[in-house]
Length: 198
Image 1 (spheres, rainbow, N blue to C red):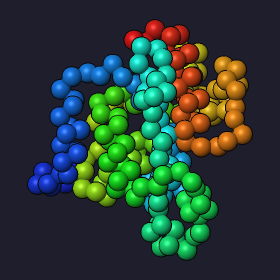
Image 2: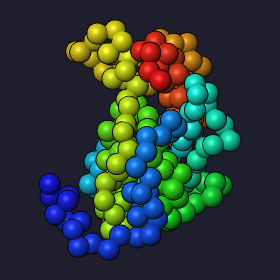
Image 3: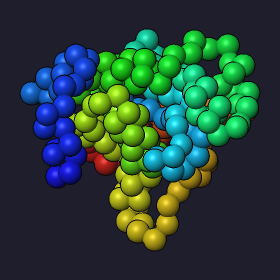
Image 4: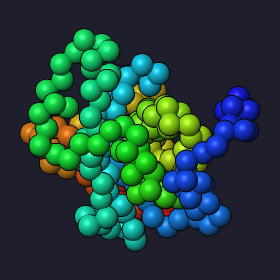
């Protein structure tokens, strides 16, 4: 309700209007994504990187992927922190505004998939708020919730590593949002078929 009131008279950026217009029809595309952040508080922390892959017709579409490192110099300057990941990464860096705009254009109206996805969605929502946009409209699926539903488990949450061990998905020494997104995509395909999701 408060989000709606705040956005009544707000003039949204063009990319956001285009994004909103895509929800007239349901997407058959899933976008599996993961974020790396400075911490676990969406109101105070920021996103360092986003990695994602599209899943269409039970296949991970490697050519339909998104990986970006965000230059969060202001955050680190304001907090007196030097972050080597952000400062030294060889990957293409965008400002937070540019990165979020590009990510929103990439996901469109796809169903989002993640591990403990509510946190990632909230981090994106906070970044959207900083550029005068609303909140994500996409449906979201959580692989931890899917696994617990499949096995009727209500009293435990599972880490990404635990789920990878259960389904014998190889872990990588490289720790990145894209590596995590790829592991989540593999887990999603296994869980999706077992739960009979289209």
